Image (cartoon, rainbow, N blue to C red):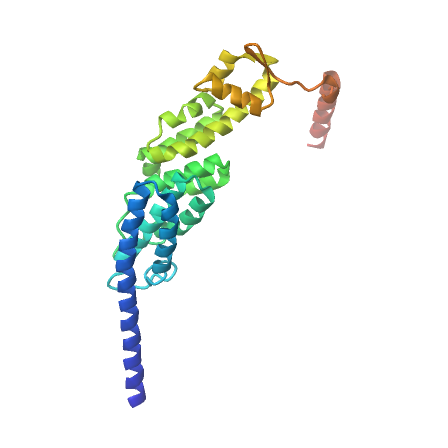
Length: 289
């Protein structure tokens, strides 16, 4: 009996110490989060990285966070705090244009968005969730990870897809890209629902501009500088000239000359032979059926 009482006393002491550590970590993390926000508002992103490391260390002492999800009197407060810390980490990675950090932090953050939906009592929704989920969709689109883009999109309810400006914006961009409506994409940075979307939108514009350049090389022998500037939506002639130099295009006077493959490099196709073979294959397939 004495042994059982001693075990009970030690267990109570252990849980009490854990609760105290969690409470201390909670208060410390709150202070560090405020410090992080202040540094981010000043644009001191180098200091932000150091503060984020400290925050992550303190978060490991909060038992309510994923993947443990331990229940306690402060569980919801811990979850809301952990979520906000990771949201700030994602937003900072967008501002410093670090896509690897963005993906790493978003994968951790997504657990708060997905795995806490059925909690009782529920964790209140984050005001930043749709902004960040839209940013993630845009990142996947920029990286041409279309399958993952649609998988992520399917996790959002239809009314969110139709009504959230953050989500609608990215869906429209993806549709324009699939349709080849490049003009809409080239104007994308002017229509962003948030300033945070501009760096990623501009990367998509660069991708589209490369596609337009490749098509122009095939379609034209040359273009005037004014025509090329208009087609590729460059703000100034200097930007166009820099892009042309990077693409190894030759500028003669006021024209851009596209390098063409020599005819010896091209495969000559006999159209009549192709038609004959196609008809033969069609007959053979019909005979088999």
